[in-house]
Image 1 (cartoon, rainbow, N blue to C red):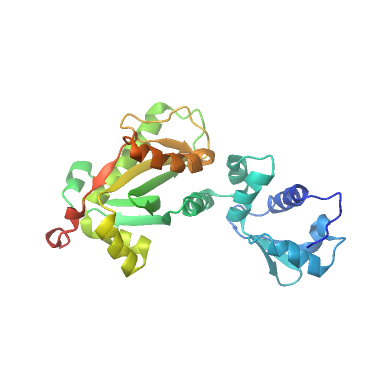
Image 2 (cartoon, rainbow, N blue to C red; image 1 turned 120 degrees about the horizontal axis):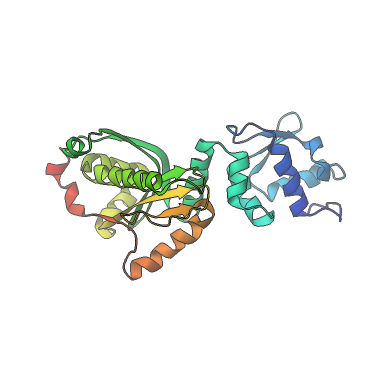
Length: 271
């Protein structure tokens, strides 16, 4: 076991690493730090440093006496160890793309198969109604029966309701457009599952799927649901929100849900 100075603690080391990576660019997700810059490591030898690093997979030994820090994993660990909430850590350490990656990692740890930045073109008649043909979904997660389409927002608390409501309605529109294009939806499910056997099992046992549009925000917001019952979930509430979905499913789902039947994947709809 590594033998740190008795006056040191895991919390103080995390705090030190946090302040060191604060100076890195927010678009860099695995900044390097000189080992000699971590004062907690100065009184222990290389073997003990390696033992410490092995305890935390987000830290890696690099060349030239450096370590690299996976910011996403660091945030998830540091939010439990430091007296800083996940919102503040994300705000200080990540750019918008990093915020998307953080959301993806959170839902992945909750058992969802997840991807970011899914783009598709609406080939259905629905585009004539919406006057929109191209879409992008920030994060998509699948844990049958739930298919989550998530829009990531770094809004401030004072955002007007009209802006929040319109953005959530657009997310609902993305969900509708996706279900209007069965071939694209099937390809998406294939991409998420990436296993012929699991894909077959999904079609045999997991339908109907429940597609839920969600707005995940960096800030807490005074809005919980928009006019169409699209939920607004802050980043620090995301884990509990996902945990509650299973409970909601056993009753009646409170949030807006688009039901996806197996029938939409009939051959005639995939042409």
